[in-house]
Length: 508
Image: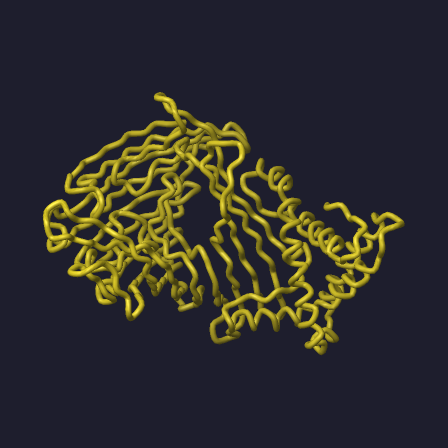
């Protein structure tokens, strides 16, 4: 807990209360794997000090809001009273740790402010947030805050010296990752239950990520805001029971192969949507998600060899429709998805120089993607069989992640992509588990724009990762993987050479 110092401001007391509230809930937070629990507690104090400074400024604004809606605060039920007593208990505990010379003015003011927070005021604030696509600040106790984390780091070297390098087949969109990740990466997720009463719930979800090159002791980086969204359940009442309305930035229902860290269905970004709409046989999800991709365009000079490629940031929009949880039989479910993506460049956009200018019409191309996924719960785990087909803008770039990185130019008009993929994780014996993947992806190019590249690029991948579990906390894992890419030259930047690549990897 941060030290309470003798200051004239109320901030030390706010810092102490908020830090204690968040840390007290970490013991119950679902941090996985288990050994990471202690590490999570170790860095929580530093995080909470920054959060508390941020939340203190917001609490002052919230106080004025609650005063304007004092009528809500006079109708407290038993649950609200218990929450106030818990909060007051924390404040009393902190006051016993103060030195005799520490002034108590800030503690009294904070106690009055926090005790004025009612669940009904939170409901008002959450409703405003959904309507305006923004969140408003409010005070919550430690019991309402969730914390989870993911992190990876390590060390490696190369036989020729120099820094650690990772490897993958030329032209492949992913790599077999066990012992083959060359960065330190972490995600920290904080969530807060803002309101939960009478079947209505508002939940704030955040995710801040960090990544460094893993080469030095002291490495700085800018944090990446991966998620910042508000989810509301029960707001449609009996019209759409069980559905969730969400708005904000979100990693939206991504589908991936964990052992190669490959997301074959990923339309994440800022957006809005409704999910878990009960349609009798399964659930329906509808979303609008936006990204601003670096879209490639050519600047041909008219003679052989005198060409170059530039990048323009183009806003792209995706409409995502998913029909999931369709139960075909016991332990066998189907999910179907349809995505429509289109570029949205400014009306007066002009890039390049005459005679190779490109305007809005060059960047507003669209594309479709269909996904079908069959999930079978088997052998203590699962098996997923996936079929995808995409056209035009939804095929780019190359055989990469489907959905996130559209290429909405004439350059991709006419392309076709298809993918067949089978992957899963099963238990072969009480102490032996295994992950596996087998897949093929092919992109067929439009001859009009790809006369020198051949007519298609094909990626094959196959791998297994068996793990022997010595006990509940320790296991030994071996990974064997093979990638092959035929016509591995990218579609716009690697020259005219057609390359076929292959890579076999073994690691443990």
